[in-house]
Every structure is written in structure tokens, then in C-alpha cells.
Image (cartoon, rainbow, N blue to C red; front, side, top):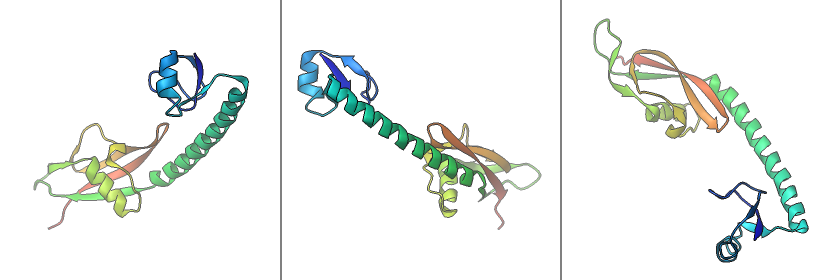
Length: 151
């Protein structure tokens, strides 16, 4: 049975794809859940209109993500941490994505720690460029200053 996918289905295809599936799978699972339409001319036209709307929405999301990335790129955060005394730049503990996320929240940017792309936690004093993922195809770099906490 040929069907048109109304949304992305893992292992089957993307929105608007025309796929051949077994009759039972379509009748018992896909149709009741509203995931597909029967592949006919009328439904093909409906899906084409939905594809155009979806593309428009994706473009708007991408534009707003790029604008947000531009704003975020100008941000520089300072994280005071306990450090070893002397000339060395070693700190006690480390600065991870959760610390950076909390500091960004105080600056007014609500970024989840999962979106902060840090290969390894920061374990020394200094300035670091840290990537922040905003959208699957948009990221921004922020400047993170790890400084010695004054007593």
C-alpha cells in the first residue's frame, strides 16, 4: 500500500515522502495515529502545501536563531573560581557546561547545558572561546574568562 508521510517517521522517511508499506502496518498503526495519508492526487496537493508551510517555518526559525547567535556572540562571561596560589594557572575543580549555563542565565540568556559544546571541562585560569549550539545548523562562540576568586 502506498502512503504519504505527514511527519517524519524514524526508519521510514521524511514529511511528504511516498512510501510502500504493508497493508496491516498502514491500517493498524499509521492511519489510526494520523501519521500518513493515502497516496492519491488530492492528498499529494495537500502535502505539497504543508511542505511549503514547513519550509517557511524552518526558514523563520533559522533566521531567528542566526539573530540570537549574533547577540550571543557578543557576550563575555567571567567565572571566579578557587585557584592554587603561586604562578601556576591551576584551579581547584573545573568549569563545566553547567557552570557556563548558570552564568549565561545571569546575563539573561537561557541556554541549556546540553547545548554548550565543551570537549573537556576548563581546568585552568584564562580566556576560552566556547561554542554554543543554538539550532542544528547555527552555533555561536562566547568568551569565557576563568579568573581567580578574590578572598
